[in-house]
Length: 444
Image (cartoon, rainbow, N blue to C red):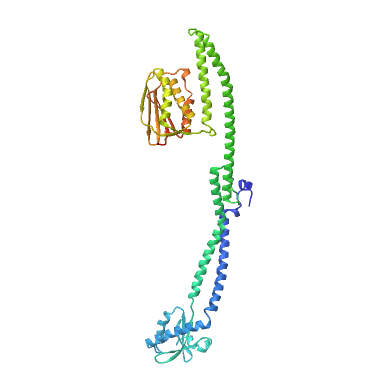
């Protein structure tokens, strides 16, 4: 086994690669199987010879074949001169070698045929005195026959079984050899599943091959992701601390400034030019105060650590109530409100505070940038599994400096809708500004 540093910085030893390990495993398996086959074949052959190829069994086989041969020559009325007709019988006997002797000399051999004009004719039956000779009665003579019988059926079957076992043994050794690698791959798979839920779940590192390198790479990636997340968290915490501190440090004197301006306005006549200056300063201060609040909300809404609690509410009641609250101010300014509504009886899961902030931002945007002399359309309805709320207003033709938008409010609206698993869509059509809100619903 090699250490983590060796895996990361050095090339894998060529004898420790997966290819080489598999080659060596196959070589070892082949040698083991070769010895197994040789030993089992030798032992099996010896046992078969001892128990099945003894003298008694061989004589029984010879007598059985002699009986078949005698029947053949009797049926065919074979004579001494026609002895070669026995060839037809011997060709059908796969495990029999036949020699025929007359007056002590070989006259027919199943391998060579008739032996009258060959040196085999000089072969004497006494040359094979240890072999059994049997009488065979031809039509016109009596001859002696030697039946060399052998039956390899059992040996062939045993050899086939041994070959199959040897092949299975080879695969068993290979599987046993790679089982550790497969087990390690399964471990890596489990580690990856563990990482999807917990980055602190360590990746097991074993061995010194390509799989180990992959494991080390995964573990290094895990550590780098943890480090990146920790750095981002530290940066976010620092930014959050900075924003909180700045908001507090700015809002405290700003609140005092707004209060002093209000007091000063009360001491000055409305037709005095000083009053206009104080009024402008008041509006700017109030606008700055709102921007600080929106900026602080923006950081909170885009924080994953900001926990939000949702509650199930009646969408018909909540939407009607919050729209009426915000539309009252517009109607008091003489703005015409057009409504296109339908039955929206359903439930939605919302955070009430964020829900109010959402519509406060929307109607604050309308008060600042909409032409309040033109009608404002409010429309809401249910479609599929969504509650759709549409708000349309006409934009002012010209914007003054104090009306310029930072779009922080709209971005906060989008973030709020994302927290609610909904959609916040804005678009313009011929100076008509359109806002669409999509809330997922739960029907009653």
